[in-house]
Image (cartoon, rainbow, N blue to C red; front, side, top):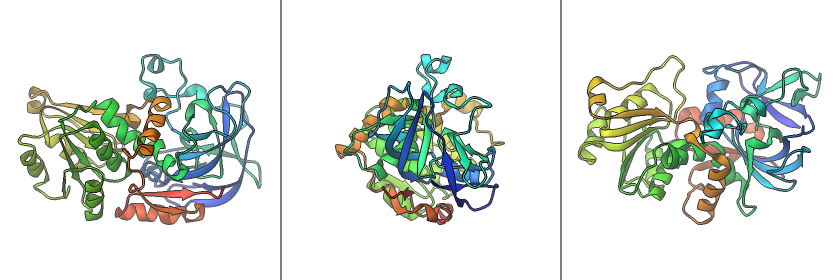
Length: 363
């Protein structure tokens, strides 16, 4: 099969032929239909976050089940599925206390010494699987707890972006923040995750939704997806503008880009008792905090890995939201590209003018 391989940090991905193993007892073989390009992939490609190499990136995918292992009970051959990087074991402390997104998924990977899921066709050398998925490839081999069956009426190019961006953004609203009707929300960063957060805030009935992003194109998209106001996040008066618009600050400020300045803005615009939620992947040496007066004012700060999702339940609901016309995935997707254009897609991402690029595979 064809796949895009990261051979070394900072280098373009290389298209090569790989061999994929047969499913083990709890594994699922999926023919990839589509995969979104996520900023998280770029962090690994650029070496900002370390990962064993060579590896195949890609984690925001949808496809059709081709084969299943002997013990698989959650999906069957022919099912349309969406994958999710927060694969869960089902029996650790995090899983049994309802915090599945925090599971480290040890039992969802192959044991040390077992045959690798991916090997290079030319010489049989092992290729690392990134984030348990490696979806920049024509096929995926994953644990059954890394995918979920969805309504077959769902277009798979749109379903793919649910696997990370929409699950993270919507999960922040519904799960981590539990936004209630009438509350005010500020979203800093209007890429795929931020736009999904804004759309979900509208669905949740937020009273005022303020989008902050440097790019006019993304601010316009945010307004289309449900923002009531949009401001330039790099304007020195951005925090003052948000505080003025909301007469004292927002109930929820959600950082969706992974930049220190964005996190600082999110904290600054909180009202007394407000909550800042960090979704973006910050530089590993970065710290985000609250001042003494913030703490005295009851302000709170939290992270929300993958939107604190419970993806076997959340993803089918998000699919239903799209099919009912509540969730606008069409506006989030900026372009559809073949696998061979993956590097150009990441170059466009760096420019920051558009939302999601989605790789579409021939079916």
